[in-house]
Length: 622
Image 1 (tube, one colour):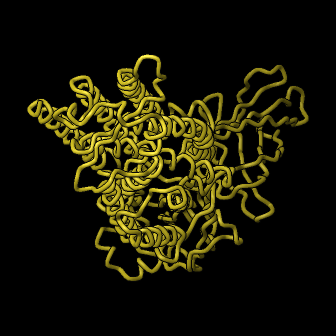
Image 2: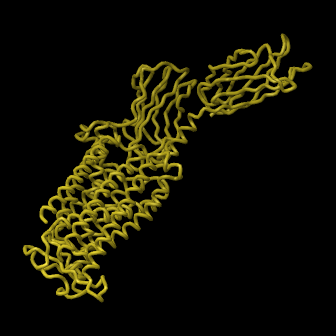
């Protein structure tokens, strides 16, 4: 029996070791830092635009509010020299914008703007673009990488995963003790969760500065960086979490949970503590930004609590099942089963809402990283539910085996074995229920205790062994769920990713604007239409194609076509498109329109040596 039990434990240890290796590979090889969550929706000047005169400021617009750093902007000239700029600020006082003033007298050429901000849900966002003054030029300033330092990002992600694990262990163990009434061996797990959460929170606080600024891990020793972190919302939330953990550290390790009065007080305090911890996550993650923030905050807190109660409770149950001196009575497993069922219901409701809020459309489920990770999480949760159903079969089988003839399964007495060193039998919820459901003499006697601490001989041994295996499988899948959850919180939600892609596409989409302009030189057959096509019809470089149609609508060949563009409001132009004859049509690839707005397009058509006419048409350039 002992050899079988040792073999089972070695198998479990190997499985956990293999899982740990997979987690390391995922964390170091599969996560390249948290993705941006605030989507850039516009820049002024526009990306790739050519301006007639130097701009006085650079302005960025985002899909949600953002925070700024002292060095949020770096503007580089064509020679890769940094341009002196003003202090970064919100343009027109709008929290969803970032702007910086530029000096007067910028020379001709192409300038590079590199920027980095932090989104409302505490994740850094960065990027770069170029614009030109006068005309484009070669530039020695390469576009900076948009990702931060990989070492800082990896360490920060590991700390975030550890924090989620510590939260699940701490809240799950507290709930298992207070609700399921089995404190014994679970206390050690509770302390372990506290230490993990404390250490990971300290690491997050120190790494926050380098993570936001994209610098190396050595930035943890920068006092200015730490000071800025403590002044921001993520830092305040992390300090609040540390304060909660410090407060609970003064609770005696064996606080009494027996008795109706004391038990209720401890239960209420434990619930308030768990609720406050969950709020420190929701206040700095996806729920704190975007649409329906109040509802999202409530949903996020409930989702976190349900996750911690279920997954952390599974870990507590597994720890209890591996303590042969303290066998777990089926009534405790039954209580946890009911608790897990409630948690699953809460997870389902809040998960559906959060998925809708984060995705925004069915297409985002497969077209975005967030959607694909969400699918993986749903599959893992389904496997977890299958494991829970299998564990419930073992619990039901054990309860049925213990039920005397004519006595309902729910009324059978289940004695709890307690080591001699632990003193008198516990009087908590487990003992009270056992006592009320039948006399202790109805259960097996101590002589029937099997070698592994289970009661009732070989049947009970098989019950505990099967239950341990199924719970171990659930815990293994639960750890993977935690990994995916951590990756989800560091991935741009599908809704924001779609908005960002649409905004980029709107700016970069290659379009064309086609305009028909009637003309008449006043001679027989000297009238028709000129078709002018601008591609893409936006600020910057454009290609032009001009086709002349005769009175019958067919193509005609004319000796000369001239085309100019003027923007009267800004006193820009006329800019000659310099179209050339290509044998039946006229083209140009060198037209540069430096400003958006309404332009007057003038086209001159000469049909003979002496017959020509100039006509005009308004055209809008984005």
